[in-house]
Amino acid sequence: MKKHMILLLLVFSSCSSLKNNYSKIEQEEAYVQAYKICIAYGCINEGTKNGLQRILQEQNDLGLATESEILGKVESVSIVNEGKEIAKKITPIDYADYEDRRPYFSDCISYAFSKQTDSLARLAFKKSLQK
Image (tube, rainbow, N blue to C red):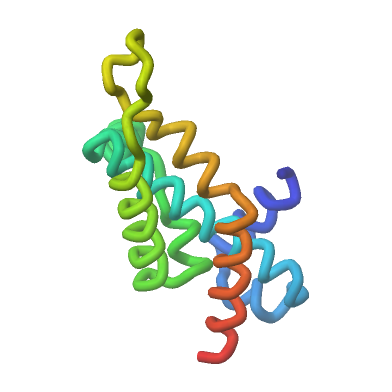
């Protein structure tokens, strides 16, 4: 985790230095982490009807600025949209105590950091190298 935070800080300050000074493996790990964060953000934000975005704005948070630097603006928006589609598929829990509430947070986090998403992110990274 600490390694990822340092890597993300360095990327934010200079994306070109990441490409020049870090190995392909480190670049891939940063890309995969950013991909997963964008999926989680899109999914949770959709599930909370833009509640996450409002909280980030109120707290003057950078939001997805770092991830956009790593992935590129167009790619990060596309991945966020994928997360939104995941949220739309989350079904209510069928327990009387939960009154048809949907487990957006837990399902979004579980999906974003799943092996399936990891594979998708690594494939997207490989495709990004071909551009």
